Length: 96
Image (cartoon, one colour):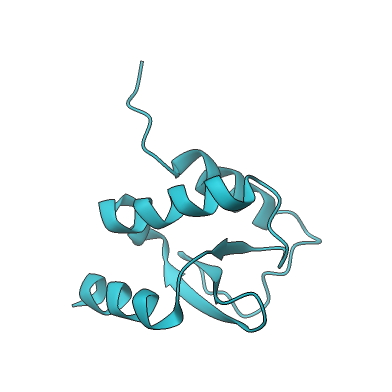
């Protein structure tokens, strides 16, 4: 029996779906995945390393995405419900 991390179920499902031939994976390097961040009117696409999936702060964002969207993301990829500046702050701390 393993430990189930919050948001990991969502991330695994989205990564599996992104491996399908019809998925919008253009310009996503190996070891990365695309996320959409921003308000309802204007979302911006970011490419992030898969290693972020193990970070507790990023997992909190995944949990929020799971609560808000479930497995049905309107952009076709992982949509994270937070402001762009908050996302950039988090990812800058993770990459440094």
